Image (cartoon, rainbow, N blue to C red; front, side, top):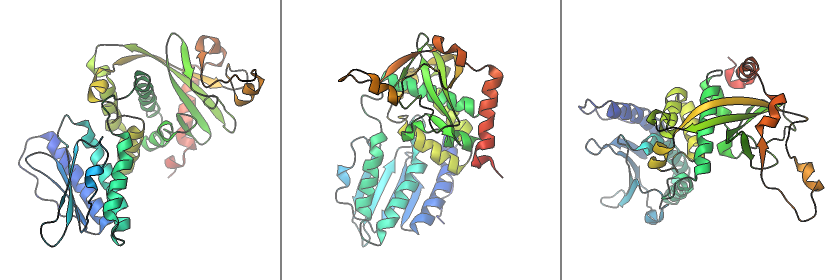
Amino acid sequence: MATIPAHPDTESTFLERKWQELATTAANVAEIANGRLSLSVDKVSGEWLMELRRVRCQDITKVGKGLQYLKIGESIAGPIPKVIIRFEARQGNSYGSLWPALAEVIAKAVTRELAYGRAGRELVNTLDEWSKWWPSEDGLSPQKLIGLFAELTFLMKLSQFVSSETAIASWNGPNKGDHDFGTQGIAFEVKAKASGKVMIANVHQLNDAGLTALYLVGIGLRQTPDKEDSLQALGDKTIDKLATNKAAARILTNNMVKAGWFRATEKQRAETRFRVTEMNFYHVKDGFPRILQNDLSKLPSGVGITSYTADLDRCRPFLLNSEQEKAVLSALDVASPASSP
């Protein structure tokens, strides 16, 4: 187990929380890496420090440009070479919440290669892979920001009826699933509504083949100036409510990374502000207005469809009432293995 230095004298709740996170993460990492990797906190800067002993990494400077908040260096002073990674974790830097998950991923990846002398190369590969999801100067497109807001809104709604573990595990959108949410044969496609219409990206999104049930969830969003309705505030609430244990926090972090949370700029997350005006559930089944794969064969030669809009006003015969919505969402916890004793 790792040795954690004494807690610094501070009244900062933020640093206290970071110190607790460090203690848990350092213990996990030390166990994984068998003492060849250590974690600590710089008391002055508030940065996390990761030290990998007996690792040389000559191409460390080539690591993903998106990792601008990581400071990576190599120390060859003394008999034992080291790679030292400094990660900004002070309050106001939302990427700090990613560090515990990244530290464990690095530990597992590097440890696999320690015996073969390839740990440095594996470190570069791991950081390059994660850099796909790091922030870019352009951030996310407006469409993706709205989509992320809608998915997090539904995730919070779902968590009112099922366990945190079930809610997080059912979020398939970030992992390129056919549907945004689903478990045990029940799936949900989540869409932000604009003037009663939603954009369907492909013919698979409303395909219920092989499912027990498929529901289209239309979420009405209205722009608002209120800070408490920002994407940043929604993400913070999601993490606070659902990251109830280490396993849940790891899965939620990975999903939020892949969904674009950290790729969006801090300004985007602060200024993307919506108030939810409605959330409606539609049962997608025979007769529902949609385009399926076999419909494409009926199109004239040379014509293809990659996306289309669905008018939800025409889908009212498939609309669930509030009691039916509750029954559908509550049934997920019963169906999920995660809820079994």
